Length: 314
Image (cartoon, rainbow, N blue to C red):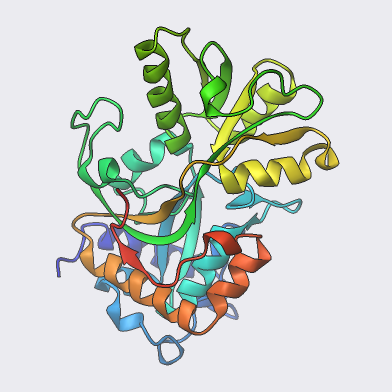
């Protein structure tokens, strides 16, 4: 196993943090409002020795995430990071003996952030796809960067949603040609819309006008303000928006969701020890029942997995 070059930076940051604390404070007890998962003693963390040495020494995993995607990850009224992913991350952290510290970023910059070593992993409702594993553009098939490994932990399809008072003539995916659709930039939903647009061109129909935004919340606002015909998002996010936006009066789901695909925790190809440690921790929380309780809490029972799978996306 190769110790990553970020070890010195991690160690320096920890020393500076500890030096700033009072003599009565314990360095290991510090938390910030984006941290998910405690730092139990090594004797209480059965899988701590599975982690790379630099992460064990630092005591935390840096998680790149677009924290604006309820119910998967979002800020609550107090500004804390909450949702399906943070809760799963906390449970993983208890098995591994480290914190999972969520760091906010726009979705389409998360992969570049991982490659630049700003993050150790990505956990952000990111679909595990063969294109992402291979580092190629999902639409053109061209190589765009180094591929990723994934630990698959949930499953979800893509859905359309519209204003409840006026869903218009869009009843499903077949009705999108000539319509305007809001979506989060860089998401699988965005890739799917591009593919659907190609079908429109192939059939001689009018193009789909795709409006891509930095966050799913921005896309929802565009739908709500009557700026587009429909929105497109992963089913959990679309269903949550339908349930909660305007007290359930703003949106309605349109048509059926696409075939479900896995969400994966993304890890750099070189970080096989970290990948395998996370997979072992996921299997542990599935076995002890924590995972089922978490997905039930966030209404995700239909997307639950029964075991950790590495690179199961197609």
